Length: 270
Image (cartoon, rainbow, N blue to C red; front, top):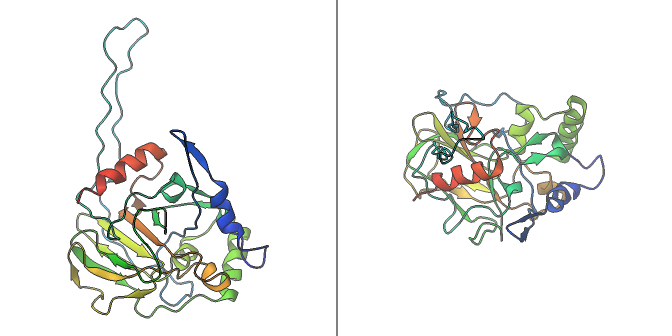
């Protein structure tokens, strides 16, 4: 990523703003940042906690097995049915799917040599009013398996260190990504499915590891923890970064944008 030691930090937002694209004749601007990885409560590069037991990939999409020949008159094969988890509510009241593929899984993040692994709910780009402290809700019944109650904010020195490491390696390692996710709460929904709630401003006092939550339980509030802009440009990266994980991967990994969007539209059925 472009850190404070390598030019204006606004380049992070500029990258996404430049990623305007035409969809159905409508020009959409994806203007915002992201971060993806489990967060480190101390802001120190430590190994992320163990995750739920891996289960078969939830993002697998069946493919048609037969291809008609040029002379065949039979109708084309039916589009394979989407598979994956369902029955989730949006993690912010009144929210909808983020506007623009740059806020969805698999979107490129060239400024840090990686890809996006979740959904970003930004003010003005996800239907619901979003500001600092907007309640973040459990999307489905489950059990809290991570809550960064002792989280310490990142420092400018740490951002510069991580930026230099990423440039030297050519990629962002898992520990670096975990730090960039900021303050987090993870909820295990059973069957190997875990949701991650990142960049939180605070965690609700009732939330801790082992607590059972219901759909709509308040987990905390929207913030920008873990983002470089938390230090260099406060209040410019307020958003919820939300991930749906199955084992070691995220739902929709490696799939084209249209399929990913369809998968997540199927996820949010409550």
